[in-house]
Image 1 (cartoon, rainbow, N blue to C red):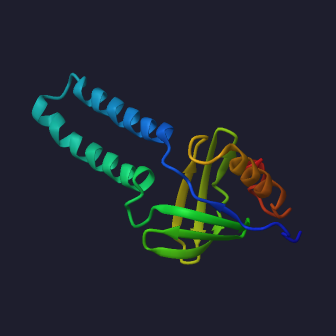
Image 2 (image 1 turned 60 degrees about the vertical axis):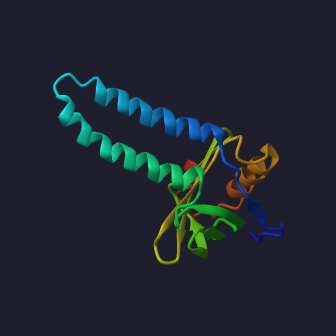
Length: 154
């Protein structure tokens, strides 16, 4: 099928829902560490280090987008042709089979030619509803029939 539609540009805003999710999951992990009865306080402190590193990494990757691997914007030409602009430059990529598209959550896993995987998480407050709808429709109907990810992308 030829794609006669113009490219779809995805310039995602910072999602408050995603920020709240990252804060809540890391805070819950911190509470679990604090309430662990078998560990003394000096045993719990070293476990906070990876938790803080994880929070900082995901906050920079998906919220502030200051990490070099953060997807700043993406342009959809077809399922097999994406242009991804990251903190380290622009690359052509392919939509990976592990992507997930649903009305309330879109996780776009884009694999660049060098094998590097970039992830763009889109929630209803990151893009206008019409852009998210067009993205889901275009991915669903431009999916080649021999592609195995058709079930996951519907």
